[in-house]
Length: 200
Image 1 (tube, one colour):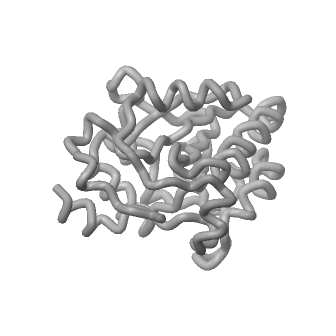
Image 2 (cartoon, rainbow, N blue to C red):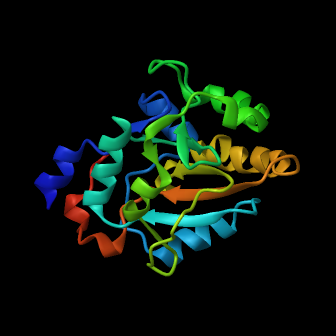
């Protein structure tokens, strides 16, 4: 399994990766989490109106990464009412600083250019909910998937969890549903502590 994980090149941190920055943000080496440990962590955050989902296994994490050509954590994935992916970035070099601007203008998501090759139906099999069942994310409303990882510490608070609060405000004007996508290494992934990458 270790070789498999190392080949994954799991994801790109959306922060500067020098050691001082990592320490400041409380980024730690990943550890194996459980659904309960993640739920307990989320409960401590001052957020509401979301549904928690997880990658089903390491293979599905890799498949998700291939679908979007990368997996960045934290990041945001927007889908219009037809279930089609609408990128908030105008080009691949943009960072997630533009998520806030996109949320402010979210009422226009159905008018924005969407990628019809990536849709909710094609993504459902990647995930499980907190009962370890397929969450069946469906079209019909604006869907936002926000990735986070427990080991990223304050990075989550300044990005994904702040976006949840912004989306709660946006939901007063549009029909939307928010999913928090946990990207930690999970105990049901058949991994061991020896398999986990080292960040610092």
